[in-house]
Image 1 (cartoon, helix red, strand yellow):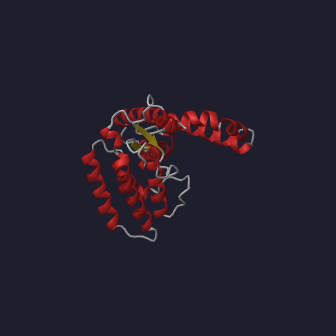
Image 2 (cartoon, helix red, strand yellow):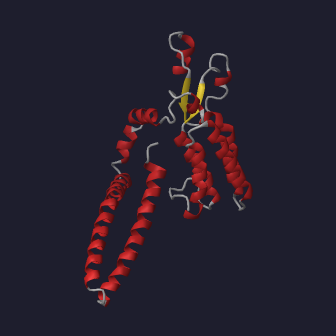
Image 3 (cartoon, rainbow, N blue to C red):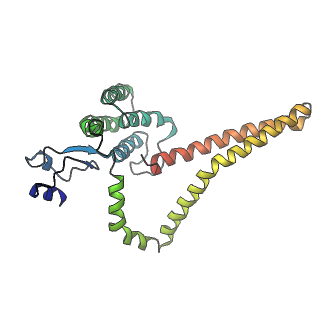
Length: 241
């Protein structure tokens, strides 16, 4: 509707827009009335699509809620590096790095990476459009937020009546509580470790104190592992660009 108004009213001229990688509008932007509009693909949606292909390559379902397996997270970071690039020249360099990487990888689902690479190549002008036009938003998260508020709130409200809907909210709140608590708890463990070191200096021959050193070592390893897992989920699903 807004696009049609832009064509009819000379006072409303749309010079650019950010969309969610959709092709529903067909060849509309190739027509005389709209071909001047600069298009930017929402970088959040581009990341979602790239991560789906990498999940499929790694053996997961594209729709899986599990994060990309740890052994392939470096590959996801290379795709994200292109999407998050700050200059046009850097974008092309990152694209060649991805191309070089994909050409040397093998696997049953390698076609998923080839598809992801082709998408990035074809979308590149729409990925970097905001670099040339600083007023163009990199994402349409805010716009979609407004749409969801009015369009999906009733169904969301009905969903909360069901046990599984309420459970999803509780799961998210539990995740948020634990995620925020990690830095505090890690600092508390570090303080206890410093206190232990002071005691150890005064009684270095005590075998029970030496055993406590191994306890702290494994404690820090577990905390680093789980905090890293939580951070990965946060960056992939909840972090705002």
